[in-house]
Length: 271
Image (cartoon, rainbow, N blue to C red; front, side):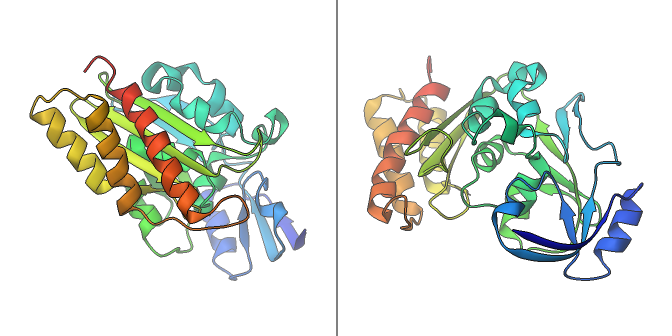
């Protein structure tokens, strides 16, 4: 349970930052959907509810999503579906239940860098970017690989591409449980990015597997079953898998090939 001494709802990002930077025990509050599951002592809880950060906006080259946007809003957004199909919707639809997704925020999921996150895996494949109040604009890949720093996540950007295809897969013991493993593939024109998460470590790009598949596409090879299986095998070999109460490392390694193969088939269909 949370142990919080003080709660504030600032009227500006600058006010929120000033309070946040006063003490390491001060914490930015999203929906607290995951934060409340752990045991944490918080000096001042900083709620961003007054900063108008719950939105999904359409720009010429990207879609901008405010950090306080609920996962349910992403799940049902017709704008997001029009550009990325059902991939992002699918990545959040099995997270606990609708009431939970009406509370959990995108910012909390992204800034928390949770290894079990579903949506991070899809966002990383898409090539999402983050806007930080102090750190500025950067790719999600860079944000995830950098050491955590005090900052406030303002928004997430999804680059638009009229020729893109995206797919997401996950395997769970039961609906509503954390994923045993998840995977995503994003095709932008003639380039594909493959990501795997819940290993149970944080999601990561399968670089070698993606490059092998992209080389095959650039050489006008037919993306048949053999090419897909070999790509998935490369992904399972280059990434590191761990064991926990949900599955062993060996099981996840095997499952990686299955999920990655499914994702590739979806984004290369008709290739």
